[in-house]
Length: 253
Image (tube, rainbow, N blue to C red; front, top):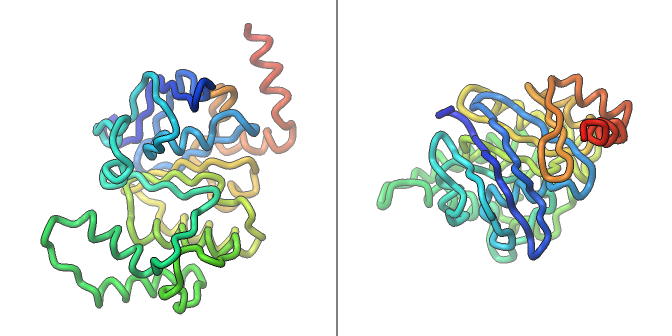
């Protein structure tokens, strides 16, 4: 599928430990897909491998953004190809303000030598901050330095809203958020939903999916997708936990 994030038979490890095992998934542009699964099953590894994290080794498999191969590319090339990763634990970047950080990311994606419209940039930045209920003074604060968990996640969604990638991978964006922050962050994501962007939402809990309603839900276990379904699958997991998944897999052997 040309207008899709396509992952085919991806095998990846960290050190000697195999984590992703023939992982395959297709996320068409314009859809929101959720991945749920217990701790240690490889959800965050998937996000980092797609983004080109150097700690992980890909043994085999492929991943494409609208037909462009991204496995083996440098992280900045993957970002320019159209992938955005919102981290579970966003890093602090001392000495770099939010305004300059986002501006540098936008300039890096422009054609070399193209003019940058600073007035239009700040007008859009402030509008997006207002939507996320972020104080405009945050533009002059260093990225994530001294931020609360909720402030870090809003900053991630602000970057997403400004960069407008083709595909966004949200790695447990709900982690550490209270209900009010969760609602605001989810509203920011829902504002971006449409035919030009696909989302892969990684989460443990169904509560996030009450706000960001997925088109498809996938259960990940032992490095691969083992069940897929509609949004009702998340409700089933909430009610039953993951034991039934383990039993199904054991009975299938």
